Length: 288
Ligand code: GUN
Image 1 (cartoon, protein in one colour):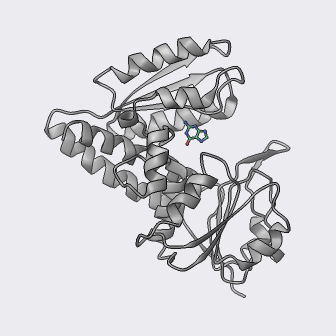
Image 2 (cartoon, protein in one colour; image 1 turned 30 degrees about the horizontal axis):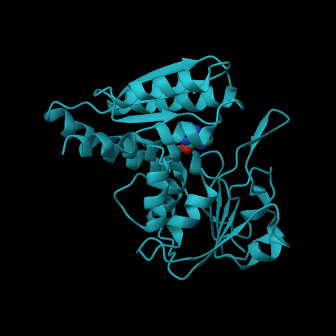
């Protein structure tokens, strides 16, 4: 079988960033500059890289950004005080607290403290609830929203499709499932979530028309777990002997799949593009 078509996340992300830049220009005509605050706690090396890329994207699009870096030993109440200050700062339309946070800080308490109207990560319970209810007025988490865009802009039909998601995390797996099971044009799929207690994961994977790997196990998805012609989306970022690899054994699976995301260059750039889109939308809603 011919090798799979690549789903070019860099190209699709660039298109979304151009769309966002056009909306930023529209806001600037009205005297509004969208603003986004980043909060990073501790010295997690991956978080430094991710926040750096998000800052660069803001600069490219003309979005004002401000980064607050707090020490690893920061007390939860001091982080909450910072979030309260950012919530009431009218220059800022979005607030992003980079995960993971240090173990002594309870992430649900932090994410519940961000004003829902500034929650461009889509992690506040109000936005999580709106997503579950199919209420489009909320903010949706950037990585699953980016995957929805990749599928839509690559002409992948999700209606009636068997979607299998590997991983049940709050950032990707659960919100992805909530999105794709909605009764909407870009969703309407039959969704299965597999996780560490799932019996016989490969048999679920082999049923999938669309397989989304987001469980964080290096090259877990092998060729014999993929239905010929299936669409394979690799969300994984795993460091193995200093090399970054996804959750999909790309070299083998690309010979079987119909469409596949490269990694890097697939889902990663989409996460940042959707953050820009959410931030511009937050500013537009604030100044509506
Ligand atoms: N850590 C990994 N992904 C994300 C994300 O989308 N948002 C935040 N805030 N932290 C993350």
